[in-house]
Length: 167
Length: 262
Image (cartoon, rainbow over all chains, first blue to last red; front, side, top):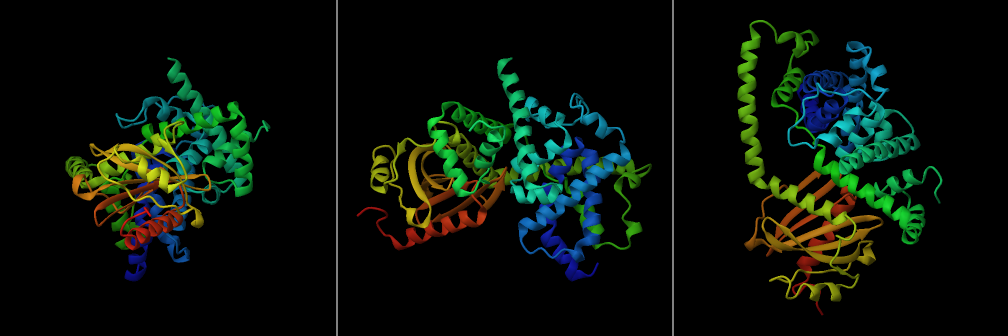
């Protein structure tokens, strides 16, 4: 890669590496796979970077997150063909997840148990503050679908929260 | 109003995604419907719980280095995924390196916290707390001449209070909050359905360090110290608008020698 393009890549894309890693962490549900996915996604981003014409910082973030999201989904299909099918069941417990000890168990686990299409809208909105339009771009579904998925995802997290309070 | 998409509408409203007309209609409804108000309040609680309990992550330094190396490096074949390179002889080496990374990581973390990240976290937590029902304002008034005197006798300084309603930022009120171990003034402004908390305290008598700009969990924070006062702004308002508001505040401060009292 020539040096000016490299400098631009470093300035435009790399500031969003934490956001990319956070999304991958929640989509893959473990640190090792998340690192692999982000690295893989960054290589793809490099490859397509010449074609990226976004100027604003937010659009660069959405652009990178789109690649991370798609890489994560195809990575799971390739390496864990059964993972998607199991997750839609939503009863799977993710005991293998490495989680920060200070994180609140219940809500984090409730998030991990959500189906990926619900989990990703929560991460994109609540942790990364993307607009509905940006989430729609990243996930490739209409804004109306983003809106209803977010609402359903929150309803489920709220049930988990309430279950915790009752206990 | 309780059709199936009502919940999604309230969510969109809290996310700042409803157009002004719909937002006003929803506010009107919320004002007269305790059940829907409770629903909204539970959503605010959930939001606060997510901020408190669901972490964001920092990309490990080793990952950052690998990505940089790949960008700077050579041919695609040289960029084999780490999975296949960390094998055999490299494994002990990688293990040692990862210990070094952990040590280095916690060290930079400590430095960052000392440098004001902890304060920025406190500011965000205060903002979230203020969004809980009944916590936003101690004095509820859109009149700067009511809000400013309210602080007299409650704080040992008198924060500047401005009314930017003409510019679309309405004064909602104020309250006393606590940051970095000292009482601070919190001025509350609103733009459409977004709440802006402005934290102010004398720069000489409290911590002032912190990032000038930060975004966490969808909230933007802006920070500056000017003259005698330290300012922190936090809101889920779009960054451009929040910066516009910050600009108004700074201008008002620089042009008013005796702020907001006539």
